[in-house]
Length: 223
Figure 1: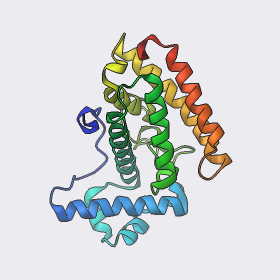
Figure 2: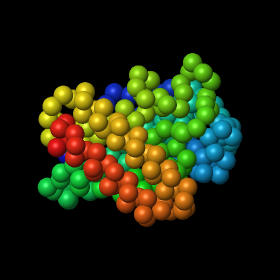
Figure 3: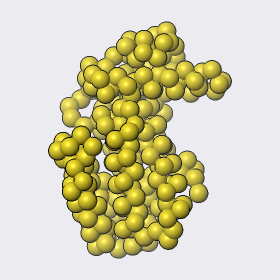
Figure 4: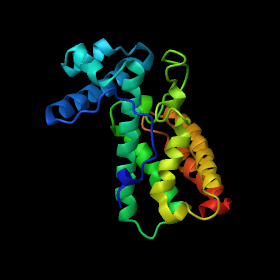
């Protein structure tokens, strides 16, 4: 099964999607440069000019793909989510049979692994935390993945599709809400874990798994 075939419709972050191989390479290089700079200077200080310089492309090339800083961050958040789901999907494929408890453990473990190893993921993952970094009325940090729903709802919908039969009992909307609440809780605990230790405090990561497993076990929509 492929995570890419189950994606929820998202608001397209890029001004123009690359088609030719050379354009795809430049597009990826720009996102890589954005990720690296996020680790160095953070989202607030990040500028498109610096990203273009790091990616070794003219600023005009960057603006062919992205309308501005908010589109660039949205594209990186979307790529992060796609990569996360692909990695999780691969682990799920070798871990069958999978129930809610194992799904939770693998989902947390993959998130932690990306926090530790993927450039920029610790600053952005699937959406920025903290105050606004883009102009109001354009797109705010809560809607980087989808203009219509907040980031955790967008992630919940993707996880719901990835889980397949695991999350298909009962009302789909109730399942989405359950997963959104689980994500909000996990996000809070994992932020604490990475504040306590650079690679994430193991005890808090374990508590995150326990918290989400216990919550999902009480929900008829996720059994």
